[in-house]
View 1 (cartoon, rainbow, N blue to C red):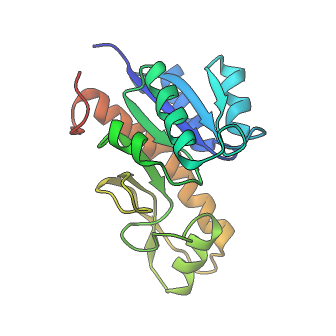
View 2 (cartoon, rainbow, N blue to C red):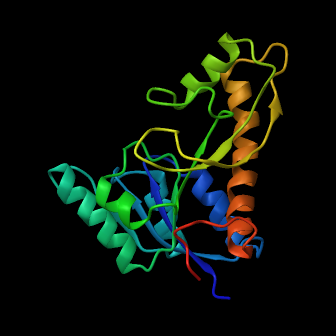
Length: 204
């Protein structure tokens, strides 16, 4: 079977994207990175893509004023590169209705907490880990889920659990969770590529 064609949307450094790229190069993931899209022209994700020879484009409100125009441009770029599964990797914008409709059931995100806890608007970055610690949770960890119209709301595909240790601060907890994010995202995509996880919108 042909490798799974992946499209990435990222806003910043793209470390989760890089972990997936590494898994592809090392043969741990039967997938091909097809395009990287960022709303930040100076993002590390775009720099990583160019270094790897992956098509990369900056699409944002600056390049396409108006939410509808941007949504159409993102959808067109994914379609033009024959993307089968879209991976959000620290993408800080809500996807538009055209892209969500075209890729319904095929857009994945990774969130640094055990959803449905500590998800939704405002729960990103260190704010998630601060909330976990403030709540006195005994464990945390990343969640890979499908994306819908609401932040951190779609069905859960996979989770990994890490302990919250005495003396943890947001930075130490974040580092422990991030290490599991890098493993879990690629592993989940490989399960999709193998047919162990079925995505309703994916026909191969």
